[in-house]
Image (cartoon, rainbow, N blue to C red; front, side, top):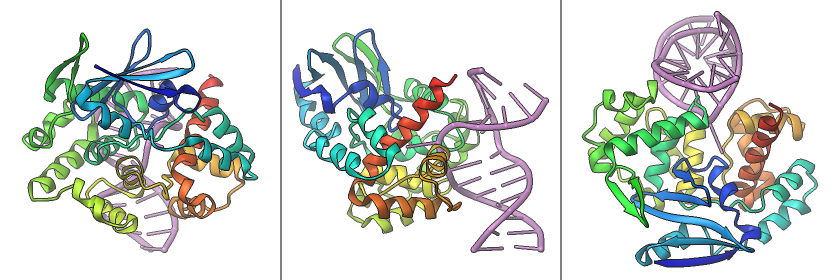
Length: 281
DNA sequence: CGCCAGGTGTGGT
DNA sequence: ACCACACATGGC
């Protein structure tokens, strides 16, 4: 077993996993189980540190997954130096968020499910898909299920997906797996430039600008990217006094303002806006 | 009951 | 190019 330690000021596990970028984790009494593909890590706080506990063979994987090479203080500081009050506040509140470097296929699959849906329900559907179709695994006394392999998912019917509660999105998932069977390699798209990558993804059924941007950001770690959903649209109008209405234009505007830090700022703002809303009820 | 949720496809002007 | 509406499903 390997223990990776990191100062908790810029690595808050609860904020990192619950900010909406990922759906595969389980809260325990003390800490979280964090899942990616077929791997699992136990992440918890001890003193002033956050500790990742995982198999030795997965240590490098999770160091990369949690983006530990990045100095997030630089990003938080540049956010607070800009003259946008809400960005400042959200970066202060969310400075413990780390953008995960997730598997591109897993992100694409999960964010297809996310459209016109809410986070608790997205999580439930994905959990069910893993429970039924993913390999049973054990880590440190905990039982969990891997994300199903692409090979396994390719054998499923639209009805199989629908039975997991994904609704009309079942058709999109099935279509994705058919394309992959035909030779589409999601991982290999990493060679493309951001704009070409986005174009390739939006060519898929059920993948529009928003889902593509989330995949580009969370799955391919392109930071010059700013997904715009209902919450970000609200932030734009209420906190940035924005006048644009087209989501694509709003996204481009934010990227122009925030450049190579856009991805991180988007997550600060998204999480902050959602927290405020949930506190008010 | 209606409205909303990390939107997108489709078919109308 | 823009617009309205449908699309499953559960929580409130």
